[in-house]
Image (cartoon, rainbow, N blue to C red):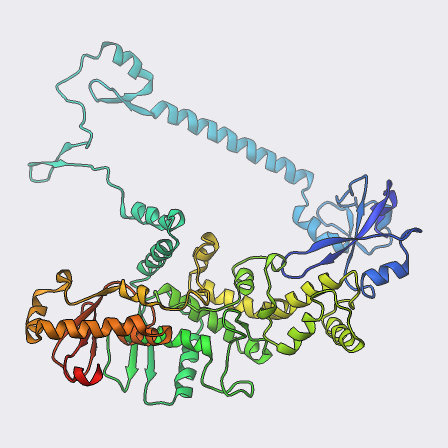
Length: 563
């Protein structure tokens, strides 16, 4: 027995620990009428599993280390300290060696401290004697010892007090006096420091995220560019393997500039980069086109829309594919790309640092329908049949939980659901969190809890009003430049109005999926942004132009057949 337990008086109780997601909670084990016994403790701890905690009721345990001469340490193997000569048990000898101070060391340390204080006092006295000050009348510097006497009779000279800009004249080597001006403008370092904290106090969460990402990219704009290549002549499986191989690289600074190239395609510019990030998020959302784990598609997230959770496949975990997913999510977010949508809010809560105990888990978050149906048997107060009871009991024992009873029914329902959704995915969440940290977006997510890196399923839909407010039509004279006048003159006013009406009518009646396809053709990804300019020109087919701004060039040719 621990020696200090022998002196416990005033009663004590036993507690057991519960939880396992970074925060444990102690639960009281109530004693029987006759006190604690082996049967009571075995039932409460599921066969003596876990650790029991003893809590005195009226006194506080003394946790200081026992002295080396304590009788409780007599039978332990000891060894003598070669510095102080005292014998200590081997378990605590290592700690003692690091803190052992002999009497000679103490005297030497005291002498050194005294000498240091004397040197400091002497230095302070010398500095006090040599300290200079400026006379406020004549602007002459002199020692502090005489400045008070000097100020009593100083009548001033012809020298004028300094201006606020501290202008003065300094002789140059050529004999010509050059005026020097010292301004009070902050340095670039000070400006950068003040800018770096704007995102913390910005009330608008979207603007705060934009300020943070722009600052991170600005700090790494001189770094080595990341080259992302994809051969469009290859099949989808090989393209996805190249994509995963790129994000599996270690030691990469993901905030550096990104250059994307499509081999086998003449496309260049920012539109190619947007195509890459759009493809990355789409693969995370719907799966990669290669076979890993005997499946036609490799899905890192599974479940219903709006309730997606990381896959529980051990093969994907051991392949570090969730680390890849974290890098993809953070990299796209850092460069303003689309965001992963439809992830379970309970998963997002735990991923961003929340406790599993406080996460709101829904039954729809459980992707395995067999497990979901078994857990749903505990929802309510209907009596379980023998088959239903056995199904719940088998699942509970498999996850080290007690069998169902009338008293623990609700508690067991919550524990089973939490483990099915969160407990089985802690390693996946750890990998995703590591990937987010590597892309330097974690400080923003930890400081600004309102910033959403994962969109809700209903926020991922694109409505006509959201798209129309970003479009600049040909009639908007503010977007027409001089170099566009020639193109506009080629088309009559009637053609421009007819084409604009047709495009607007299509947008107002199209589904969310069709609108996303239109925006992806227009911008390169599904996120509408900035000014999306529409121009009517003579051409065979509609074209997208990334030169200088986002333009969609439509044609009046064959319009009668399409309308």
